[in-house]
Image 1 (tube, rainbow, N blue to C red):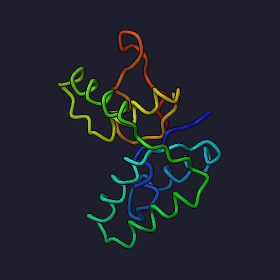
Image 2 (image 1 turned 180 degrees about the vertical axis):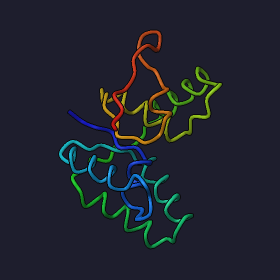
Image 3 (image 1 turned 120 degrees about the horizontal axis):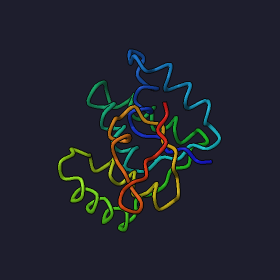
Image 4 (image 1 turned 135 degrees about the vertical axis):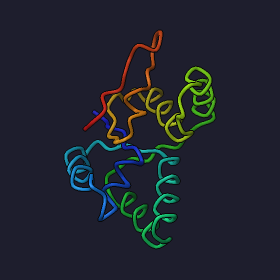
Length: 138
């Protein structure tokens, strides 16, 4: 079963001083044969690492993901439209565009498991009457 990897886990795994580093690395190892992420997550990760450190570690982080068994899915126009619907339906939440397109992509691909340290993944609901929740690890 596929597990979607959010920026928060990738970042924690690459940041030597992150308190969740060991947890993130453990999650990635445990699910290494079924990891899926998105192009938007990679862009967000690159920007986050570059702003907090330098462009070289940002490049290394993205290169490591590409060298792994992780499947990178591209966000579609339909995902962007679904992300806008999510924004409208959850207008009281500060969900990022990357989070919203991640959820749209997960729904489109039928992925129900997420590796995320972001509480927004626990808040979001989908499906009929928005009653379903992703299984978020840890």
